[in-house]
Amino acid sequence: MGSPIVEEGIRSHLRGRNRFLNIMTHDVAERLRIRRKALADDAGLEHSYDVGTYPPDATTVVMPSNGLARVGVGALLGGLGSLGVAAALGAFAGGPSQVPTPVDAQEWEITIEAVNGKPAVTKAEVIK
Image 1: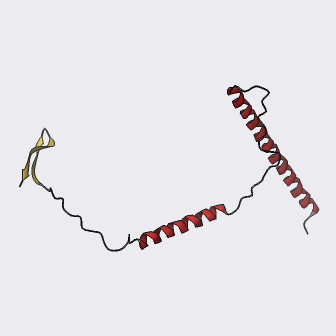
Image 2: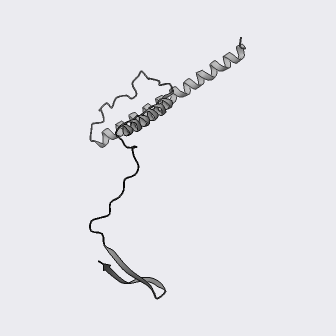
Image 3: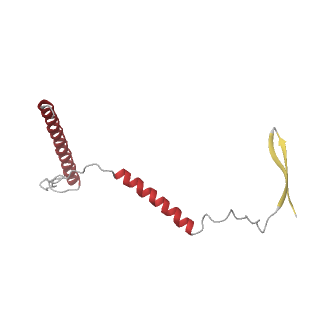
């Protein structure tokens, strides 16, 4: 059994943490209400226009889960599936194909000489 002093300390810590989170939630809600009110004023709506409350009175708390692991597994399975489809379509079969020479291939004779200390093409002729 834990010490009553330690248990009370933990309860006190959690109550303080929950109060802090509650204050922060209400602060964010109030800032959003003020922002919506300013946007309504900029849009030319009356000052009596009710911008509503956000978030609603019931607050939903989402606890962290193993979402990152699920994303990782999904990405891994998607990648493996893509490789399987590529293999089924023959993307990995055989070696590289030979590149054919162009039909209009030309041979050139080029002379490069130094002009003022820099290389320059002085002669270029088509051979054929």
